[in-house]
Length: 335
Image (tube, rainbow, N blue to C red):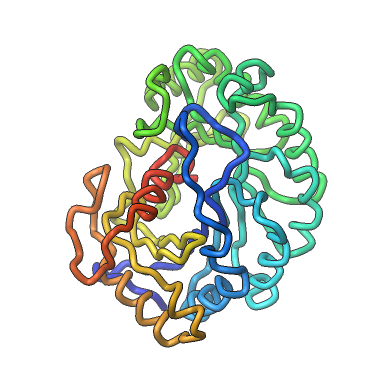
């Protein structure tokens, strides 16, 4: 069992397999593209899996694969199959924008994937194009259909923005309900890469819009999750993620691993340690020791932008790690 320095059980590993993305969402990406790390600097799936096995054997029960857009990483289904064959009972999920999903949903399901979190910010073609800065809606909806047809469980995620999709909140909720998917509305998180023209809706505003048409009540919240859950009179549940007000530090059960081998104790991190050298040498004991140090370094609480304490044991940020940090603190890292 993995226990951090504050007595919290850590049983959730998030793995970013790439920082590349095929969207340029206005709430996430800068106008000038990131300088992506060369492919040879990324850990292979085999190398990542060596570390994943350590985590699974130590009690990790949930793994979410993220990006960037994870489906841009070739042979993702093979990585999922590695994890599933080692631990068939692990809760194995990905977060995706859905654009390429129609091509991969069946293979991912067959490999052992259980769940998908998928972005859907608008049901209107032009709005979706405005946000993603490319025409995406047709492919995204086709991806959703393919995922459901393959038997994958799907949650939809919507970043709620004033003057952009605030008039679609109810429509999006009704669409998700009709598809048998839970939807979570996410408060916009300001970040250095997002365009200044965007203004987010607060959780109270989102709920007020829904309350104009539906009655609902608060439902039981998952202690280790970021979403507040609400239930309509017909039993359908939806969520609101309001990271500005309701962090979940006290029950945080997660750590993050990047494609380059940075092991990150907290979303708003100031410190990261790298497992890359240890894994590439086949030094599993060394990688395990780094994991132990990162767990001890995991802060009890954040101030909303960075960990409250700077840990001297951790390797300092490189310029590249700082870029990764900026990407991790965008709007989709909560889901």
